[in-house]
Length: 439
Image (cartoon, rainbow, N blue to C red; front, side, top):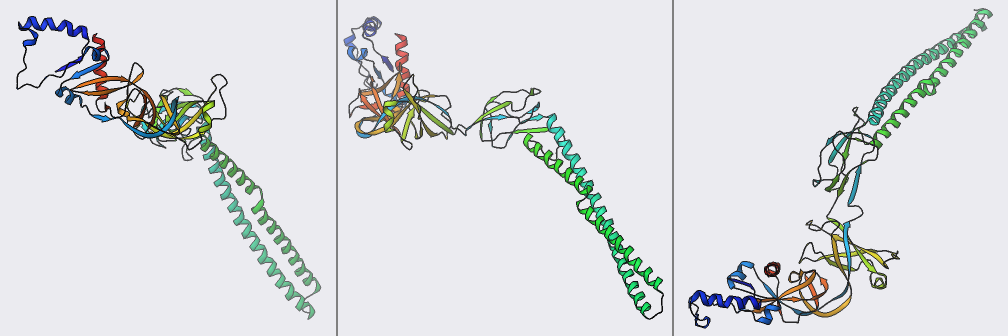
């Protein structure tokens, strides 16, 4: 049995109806001894203050669990409004390095992708031309190298033949000189042998020149030119994001990080320009809390200071981080500057763009504290539900302070030793709102 909220006027209207239905005075009603005794009704004062009464069975179904508010030493903190955004390296705009036509789309908004995963393909005329030039230069370089090698081989053979003729003619000259001294041959024969040596030495000199030309000549220059074109084409292909062994001008668009596709700005068949933005990929595991801090409160905040925050989007949860940077620029209109802190978001519950209320510790103070799950928001104000006993619970407006891990400081509205609802507090909030709507 649930008797949600007992406004006094509803209770007054209900009594005559019960009397008429039973035919007996209300005071003559008696409960069956075997039935559970009904919960005590809320008094007029309690009803007006938002006291709700429930049966034991209803409380079991609601999963109600309580905790005692305790006085404890907590960090004294100052709260600031703020928002969440991806860390600097956790948001990437994926672009195309060359203009062309979108031939393939392999990822949609919301998809989880890995670093290096293919997101799309672009067919680029610039890349196709660079690939064709590269392959032509490879062939030209190989042909020049082969021709150069043939020239080297031929000049080498000619050089060796010239060297052999020089050696043979010198032997003939030595023999002619010996025979001439003995008077066996004439001077004319000697001069003929000397002329043959000079002729073959001149031929050897020409062969040496040809050999040197084979090393530094025209063919070598052509081969070097072809190699330069090949290297230049290869560099352009890499800059465009293509493959050296490709020829179709296809550019794979790859995700540079692990994350989720936050936006996709192209469709299949669309023509895109160089450096056009195609996708946004965000790694929500790494977020930054950005807090707007008054210039008069900044002196106590330095990099490394611990911060905590909560968001209305995730009631009952508290998150922690560390201050990484404190801005040096004060907004002249608001007299505020930005404090940033890195936040781990392993379960992905937090989203970029969420508004948050951040707290930064500036000292310690003794205060009343309750589990964070006990604090709910009703009408944009923090409340807790205090257990009064006999199935009764009262809404209590409170002023919250520091949040640390799973604890929240209560600066006003609650005393040490009072019992508050932890598990099931959101259910009580729902019951309260339904009762108010019925009024």
